[in-house]
Length: 408
Image (spheres, one colour):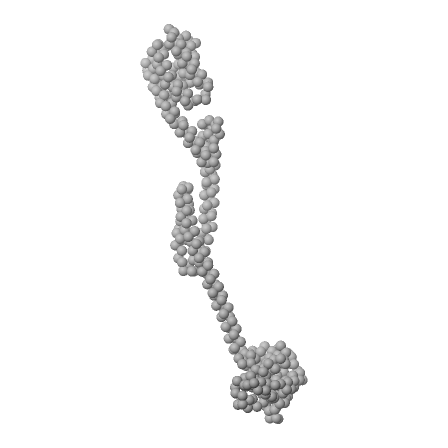
């Protein structure tokens, strides 16, 4: 009996620090351990263990054993354990001791791990929570985190889908400026794959793609500036070309000396004349212009031609057409004018020219003009009407010049 009591005390000495170290806040357990030891020490000093005292000891020890081995302590204290039962109990107590030793080492690590896990998730545990509550909360937070991670994975995949369209556009722009854009092609290859579920692998792929896109973006910015400069140059070239075309068109349709319409522009004007309204024509020729060229030279003659063109322009309406047909011969088209209006204009021109002081080589020259006037007849073409006016001009020359002839 004494041997058993000593064994119990030794075992209690072994168990006590482990139990108290891991249940430091459990006042009831401390009290029970203290009471058990006191009772066992009391029994050690008594020759016999009263049944009531045995019950107290058994009740305390049972809490440290499992149901199977705790049943040994519920027996009648007068009945001794068999040798097999003693071996079983001893083995069980040894296992419990190892478990408590392991728990003493693992418990702080477990607490630290749970706390860090909570903090990594942004959910620090309450200071007073026991280990079970902390573990359950961690499980719940992990489930929520995984759900959010799945949602984020879906959103990132959708973003990648949108990026593919943008990357195609960037690639087209860079290829237009002669850059094969390997960075974008590499990013396209990376993002064409399914995004890994592992966060670190997914992050690595996204970082590589992002790096390529940033480099391509810098290239695109440079390409944009280059294209902008090229567009400005092209716009400038187009503007210059347009001006040249306008100048060429003006030269093709206007007499370079006087600025009046030439035969081409006159033909275009005649082709657009309405057929339902009257149109009159005046043919004009400078009298003795050859003598002026012979005396004052062609430069002097050019000055006379420009001065006469100015008089003709100033004397006509904006709707009229004044053209130089060649040499000293001019034509005026009067849309909507009857023959009497054309005759009045011709008379005014004849008078204005005869009193005008023309300058050639710093010399004042007086000259006259001869004119022929016609009105377009029914079923007559404009060219036929002009030909009749030209015949009237010829008649004015024959009759002595400086006069008007109305064509029949």
